[in-house]
Amino acid sequence: MTVTQIWIMDDGPDITRAAAELVASLSREPVMARGRFNFALSGGGTPVPLYRLLGSPAYALALPWERTHFFWCDERCVPPDHAESSYGQARATLLQPIDAAASHVHRIRGELDPTAAAVDYTTTLRLHADEGLPWPQIDLAILGLGADGHTASLFPQTTLEPEDPNVPARAVTGDYDNRPSQRVTLMPTVFRTARHLVFLVTGANKADALAATLEGPHDPARWPAQRLQPEGGTVTWIVDRAAGARLQAIRRGAPTTSPLRGA
Image (cartoon, rainbow, N blue to C red; front, side):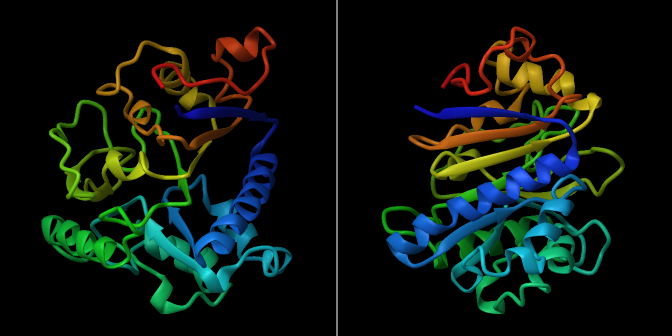
C-alpha cells in the first residue's frame, strides 16, 4: 500500500524549505544501505527554488552529494543549453553549484530524436539498474502537477498502454503552456518501484487538478498522478494554500496525512 502525506504550506518559501529538509533526511538511509542515493529531478518553474536552496552552502554538508546519482523524470526534446531543457535548468541551479561528478549525472539526451532519446535513456537506466530491477530504484523523485493534471510527461488520455516492464522510458507528445511538445518520460512502472515521490504544487490554477487527483474518482487516464503509487513507498504532496483550497480534507480541518484513494 502507498502512504500519502499532504502538507499544506503558506507560501512558496515554506514549500522550498520543507522540501529541502525532506530531501536531506531521505538521502541518508540509501547511502548507508547501499552506498548511493538515486535522486530523480523534474523541470518547470516550481522546483527551481528548491534546486537553488539545495545547491547553496547551507546544504553543502547536509546531503551526500558525492554519493548522489541524478536521473530525470522527463525531458523536453531540446538541446541541453535550451531554455526549456530540464537538464539545463538543473545544471545551472544545482549540479554546477555542488560540482556534481559527471559520472553521476544521467541525463536524457533531449537533443536526439524523441524515439532515439528514449532508447538511449533506457540503455542508461539499465546500466545503473539496482539488483532485481531493470532500472535504478529511485530513492526520491521530485514531481509537479500541471493544471491539466499531467505529471512528469504523462499527459491525460495519452495512450501508454500496455506498460512493458522492460521499457522504463518512452517518447511522448504533450502540449502544455506553450512548451516543447516532443518529450521523453519515465513510465509509471519506474515510479511504482520508487521509495519516495515528492510533488510540489503551487497556485490556484492547480486547485481543481489537485483535488481531483487526490479526492476524486479513481480515473488514472484523466489524472495520471493517480498511477504513481510506489508499492510500499510514500508520496508526499507539498502544496500551498491556493493549490490546496479545494481539498475537502483540508476544509474539514482533518490531519494533512491520509491514504491516497485507490491505493
